[in-house]
Image 1 (cartoon, one colour):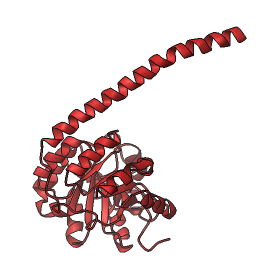
Image 2 (image 1 turned 90 degrees about the vertical axis):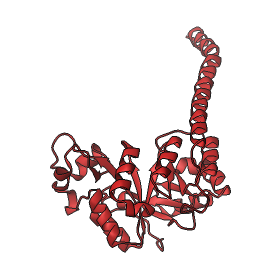
Image 3 (image 1 turned 60 degrees about the vertical axis):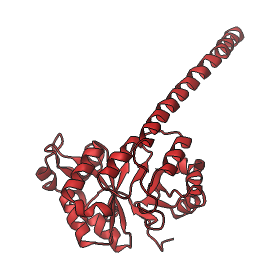
Length: 287
């Protein structure tokens, strides 16, 4: 028994250097790939300081997926916008997805959240009219892009942050073409360094880089953010508390953290350098 254990330990000790080298090479390869992407993005426009909404112009609280409506999160519904506007919030992150007939509607995804919030939905992705005609849990009202634009017209001090998980650039092109008058009130999230130039070219003044889909190295994020005219960088609480929020804040880049529903956690993140949060339930003046 002891001999076998000793043999396993010897084999493990022999393998560790090789495993460490493989991991280092993988990390180095990812860094090199991201650095090339950053260099490519740096050849594009940087914007002009003061052009975008910065920390002075963005609310510290952004209602996540429109904010909770009657206790239901992730709904992106008309009632979510109305309820959280009434609670004093003025910035609303919304999820946009493509329907089967190529229209944009407000839904977090076509999988778990869609089935949960639209229990009568059939299989597959619906058309725009099919989506809007589906009964929504809790009597909530679904919206498409045109409905969101109409709501913004009726609430001239509200801002919208977009989260488009598929074909982000195509969605922003559609928004810019169909609702150009709202470009100054719509803040796109981009998911990659090289999306910045095309999105600025569409006429959007304020852009957020979000990190939840690309594991960019902290140093590259800092370099990119300080060289671009960003409205801010969005990240999870682990990355923010791990030092990235402080590094960005020291260079004047606002940091927003998702998704925070605890006031004490919000204070801890702000102490770590976060400017604001995305939240389902918190409101200014709350506990």
